[in-house]
Structure formats: C-alpha cells, structure tokens
Image (cartoon, rainbow, N blue to C red; front, side):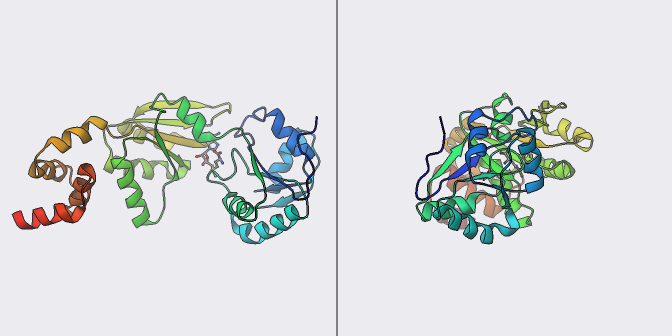
Length: 281
Ligand code: SAM
C-alpha cells in the first residue's frame, strides 16, 4: 500500500536518516523517499550516497543553512503546486542542530502538512545509554561561541538540575570541557562517541579525567552531564539570607550573580534580595 495519498497541496516529510550505520533507516523512511517527487537535502552529494545505497533515484534540491531563505520559498511553492517533498539532513533528524526549522515554520504558517518520519538522532541515543537521569533533560546543542552567550549558557548549566546534553566537535572538546569545569567540577559526565559506527564508545567518568583524555578523542561526540543536585536547592532555602550569600561567595561568584541566584532559589524578585543586602551593608 502506498504511504502517500496525493492531495491538492503536497506534504513536507521530515525524514531522519542514519548517523553512521546505514542500516539505521526505517522501512517507512525508505518508502517515503521512494514515493516523494523531490528530496531536499542539506548536502546533495552526501544524500546521493545514501540514495544509491538504497537504490532510489529521485530529483534532489539543496537546502542548507546558507540558502534556507531562498530554498524555503521554492519548497513552499512546489508544495502548494501539489509536490510531495522529503527533507533530509546529512545525518540524523533534520531540525536538530541541522537545517529544517525555517521551512517547517513556513509550512505551518501556510497550512501545509508537515509529517515527521522518526529515526536516528544522536542525542537521544547518547542519553539513553549514558546511565544518567533520563527523566528530565535539557538538550542545548552546541555551546555558543560568542563570549557573552557562552557565559550565560554555562550559568544555565551550573544551575539546572536536569541532565544536560551538548554536541561538540573533537577539536573544540578540550576548551569546552575546561569551560564546563569552571562551573561544574564534581558532576558525572559521559562522552558518547561515534554512535552506531565501528569505534562506538562511551566514556563514563568525571570532568578531570575527561580533560586529560580530550586530545586523543576523535570523531563525532555527544556530552551528557549530570544535573545539579536537587537536595542542595532545598537545603539552601532553609539557610538564612546571609548564610545563603556566603555559600555562593565561597564558590567564587560575583555579588550580582549571587543576588540573581538567591532570588531564583527562593523564587523571589531579585530587587527584594538586592535591597536587603544594600540595607545590611
Ligand atoms: N541532526 C543530527 C541529529 O539528529 O543528531 C545532529 C547534527 S549536528 C550538525 C552534528 C553533531 O551531532 C555532531 O557534531 C555530534 O555532536 C552529533 N553526532 C552526529 N552523529 C553522531 C554520532 N554518530 N555519534 C556521536 N555524535 C554524533
């Protein structure tokens, strides 16, 4: 039976593709790729290799970060004319640290149906085998390179009790780990490397040990970091305001950061905390 029913307006299928092992593609994904009129790909040469492996011949159009605007217009126009389109990225799920978001948003605005075809995604698989808490997690993608944004993100990592998931390139790993160590020293960390490939590896360790190994670690990698301890937050709110302040002062935080953090821990307005410290100083 055919998967796609021809309608007046086409559908955009978001198709997940392998993150290494070419066998990690669903039967439904193959069916969709065979039935669509057009495949929009992050890198057409890369996708061609997958299509050749699957013995699928289809027209390809490039859709990557640098042409998202123009190509979104073209894809929307084709969909409105009734074309069925599949969107794929180089590996894994489109839209997850990969192009896709823009055309998906536009299709929703234009009332064009968007359907996901589930499959591989590096962070989900890294997380489930990390051995860390999978109940609540925060996927942050790549850490920002801009100094201010990076500092803010690192602060967020310091404060969240959720498991944190980051993507990183091997040549930036050591710097990233050192930056992370500044905000979190004593948490478990897992590096999941080369998932689904020959050299697949999980390193379940601590920050110090991972920094020592960082230079020799190659390939594609995901970092999974244990969240901040929950009990700490509860205990902190039992402290007097002065004790609470001293707790963060000992961690080397600035007055501004401490006031912001105390307000967050106690769920009060930061001006309230600020006023108290101004009056008492
Ligand atoms: N869309 C992809 C997904 O669904 O996971 C992510 C694309 S993002 C541009 C590429 C990053 O994903 C890599 O730098 C790495 O952090 C992670 N990644 C992709 N494939 C991986 C693999 N086989 N093993 C570990 N990490 C991988």
